[in-house]
Amino acid sequence: MNVCDKCKRIVNPPRRLQPRGKKMLCDTCFYEVYSTPCWVVRQFVREVAPAISGKCLEPAVGDGAIVHTIDEMQGDGFCQWTTIDIRRTNAAQHVFDFTKPSAIDGHDNMVTNPPFSLGLAFAQRGLEVADDVYLLMRLNWLASHKRNEWLRANPPDAHVLPNRPSFTINGRTDMQEYAWFHWGTLAWGGQLQILESVPREERRLG
Picture 1 (tube, rainbow, N blue to C red):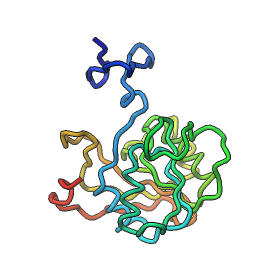
Picture 2 (picture 1 turned 135 degrees about the horizontal axis):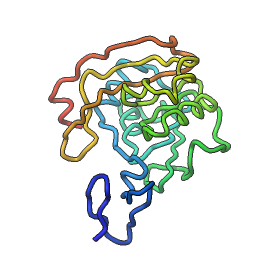
Picture 3 (picture 1 turned 180 degrees about the horizontal axis):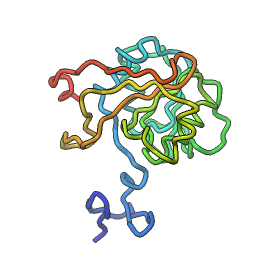
Picture 4 (picture 1 turned 45 degrees about the vertical axis):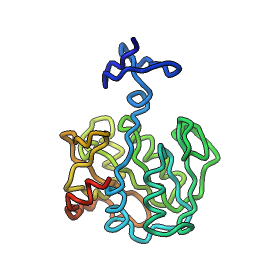
């Protein structure tokens, strides 16, 4: 029986476990795939980037939750999307590793919920291809020796979610706080904003 060493889920053929160090992981854990709750994206549009439009990039698109929710709020066609994922998904127009060199360029905005371990690489590559970059990350992503030098030179605005999002089917939350980090032409460079609390009823809707 194939069981992921991290989440303990059973992985049935044709899917396979993938090695990382001494652990064998399912695709979800290996690629750090966590679907973004729609209420988190709605709050992003309301309070962080209400005028988001133009050429927009989602380089870790997954199931397309960020793209679909922004289009629902802004209207189809308001954003012209380029979507990427390292895995083949229904929402991905292109399948490759975004952190590697590619022809992708010239975007107004990049919005994504990247793998935690690749957050720095996504931020750096994002600033090469988009005017404004928004990453949904754990708040403690800021506290790191590895990222310290770059973050001190490139401090993001941090838009902190007062409610913990759930990235699981059962609706449970972890013990981490989250924020939208923003770099770019419209960012202040190190500004802190505490977003409004989202009613429980809206969060339950997803």
